[in-house]
Length: 221
Image 1: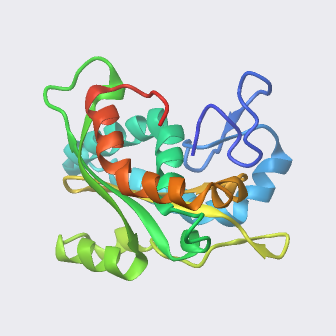
Image 2: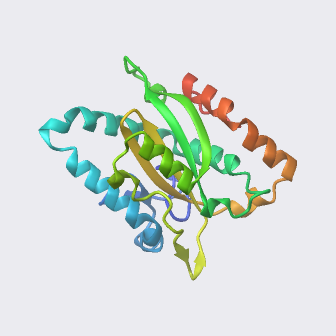
């Protein structure tokens, strides 16, 4: 989910005009054709985002709404880096099918007071790559409502009859949980990385990403 590029074909905003999905307002597309093609993999997260936003409009939920909106804006800013680090964490060269069985999970905290620069709104506690069942068990133990777990671990959608490469990302910050899927058009390149390099990235990504998030710097791996 990178708002600076089409959520389907990945063309950057510098080359095409992007329009936001009217349902969730979180992802953008360069054309109606791209939006239609991406819909099978986007519709579940789109519906969940819309329902969450509607529920948070109730007066009693204003604090939760602020937390939700803060996390969503931060994710929007960091989506490209989360995708890159998530793919590295999956170790696809040694585990080529892991996108279908595992979830990239981050445990964050809201920074208080909130700084003006929204790239620094969050700090990272920890992160991991977990099988779907293990992540669901962890989140249930933390008291996360079942309704918020609905998107986690669904079977990957298909594109032209074949399973699509989709990175599933789950971010928790206090009581706020956000799950989203990133269509990956270049997963084959990650599967072709030398196995030792892939294993090194998977073993070292947590402190590297934590340093970047905590310092608000979005430099390369």
